[in-house]
Amino acid sequence: MRILVLANQKGGVGKTTTAINLGTALAAIGERVLIVDLDPQGNASTGLGIDRASRKISTYDVLSGQQRLGAVLRETGVPRLFIAPSTLDLVGFELEIAARPDRAFCLKNALEVFTEEQSQVLGDERFTYVLLDCPPSLNLLTMNAMAAAHAVLVPLQCEFFALEGLSQLLTTVEQVKNSLNPGLTMHGIVLTMFDSRNTLAAQVVADVRGFMGDKVYETVIPRNVRVSEAPSHGKPVLLYDLKCSGSQAYLKLATEVIQRERADGGA
Image 1 (cartoon, rainbow, N blue to C red):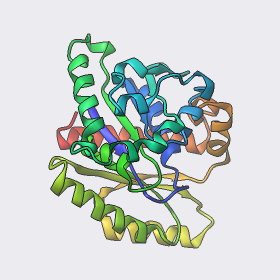
Image 2 (image 1 turned 60 degrees about the vertical axis):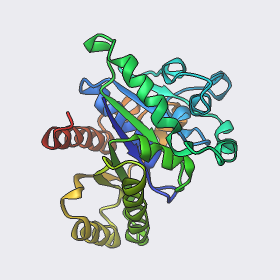
Image 3 (image 1 turned 135 degrees about the vertical axis):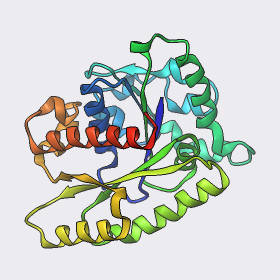
Image 4 (image 1 turned 180 degrees about the horizontal axis):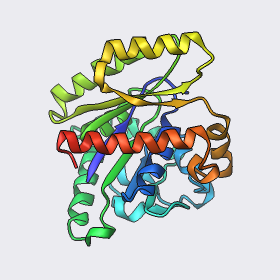
């Protein structure tokens, strides 16, 4: 079971959209995927059709040690795709655990229990990917995700300040690696919201590739109205409109993620 964290301290870069649609695309090509929603806003949960009123238990209960991760999983409208939903209770989580010495390892501990449970499950029922969707900040929730993950996947919007935010995030990843999770690696950077009519967007793509080299995925996610519309229907874009350019891009990204996993020996 591979654990990937989707992180970027900047909001509006397509992080949750990528979590939902990459998870759906991985499930579509045969993987069994769990999305863990760690954002108090709960957009990943809403985008997969989980009504707020029905979230009686959530990732807050998992992080606070009141529930096992396996107990909060919810099925989605996508076969082989599950979600651990979040609620606004997560807003106060940092204050609650600030004084605890293990405050950065709450999620890691929960995932270790979940991994042990998964080892008892038959092959087809066993999760192969866990995607951790973080809030748009480098807070304790994001630290918990990075401390628990095998690798970081960074959605990066094709816009002027992209590289500035990326360097800050890379510094944080390195700090987490040195202090909390020595095995953490950079899986890759996915460029999102690309508008081919925009000269600046093409320049950002060139700059990021020049700066990060082969850590940038070949697949670029285009700016696509169908991708933006899908969450309001509680669906991933692959269910909303499979043939649109956004859906096709996420399917390519899922294939590329798996190829990198195999090349790195992670799958």
